[in-house]
Image (tube, rainbow, N blue to C red; front, top):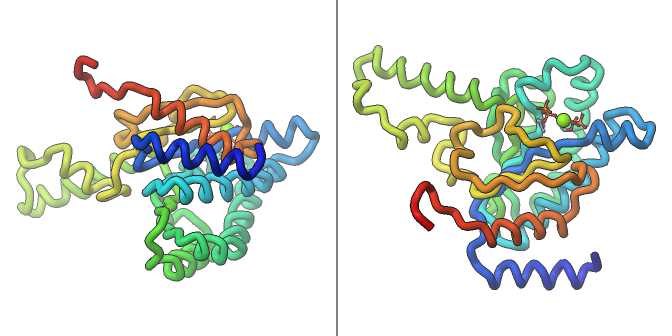
Length: 249
Ligand code: IPE
Ligand code: IPE
Ligand code: MG
């Protein structure tokens, strides 16, 4: 798709209104992309960097508030050590190399997940990058790193039970709003649209609470092949959905 076509479509989508406030993406299929080309799996992760750039740009152009990218799951630690190490090194390098472009695009960076599991050099670079981008008012880019939805719920329950034990909270005062405030995602709006690439029809422990009423869009495209036009296609599909939230349409 040419630049002018994609610009036109961006304007069309905006004109329709009804854009998602928060888009979440399970960026899947990097390994298969590489294997099909006879390349090592890490080449697929590296190729996915362009796709990240394109969706960040696309969300910025549309004026979307939040974009959460499933970057590394709590289960991904069980992959071969060499792949995990290569992924961490790559993340470190990308943070250094992309910060300028993110800043120019007015992007603010946040994370969810167990940062304490990450190598110290990655954590340091994350702190530096988030500090540099913290006053930006455009897209909120949220990286899910060492993230697991079940663990997030356990962490939330432990926090609330600690409050009960300390006598600061009564069990009957726990409601949905309180649970939500004590998740990693705090006060962010829940995702309206979940995109998963590579055709897999599962959540893989991603945002279990927050995705309760997200519209799900699965595409067979592998993550390294996902382009801005594909994001716009997913958003256009979202705009046609009838979100009933259990009511009669
Ligand atoms: C997604 O691609 C990236 C991460 C999970 C880090 P995969 O590495 O899962 O690619 P496939 O699913 O094996 O093709
Ligand atoms: C989900 O993809 C995690 C990320 C995209 C970071 P996986 O490839 O790890 O999920 P499964 O193993 O296919 O469920
Ligand atoms: Mg996968």
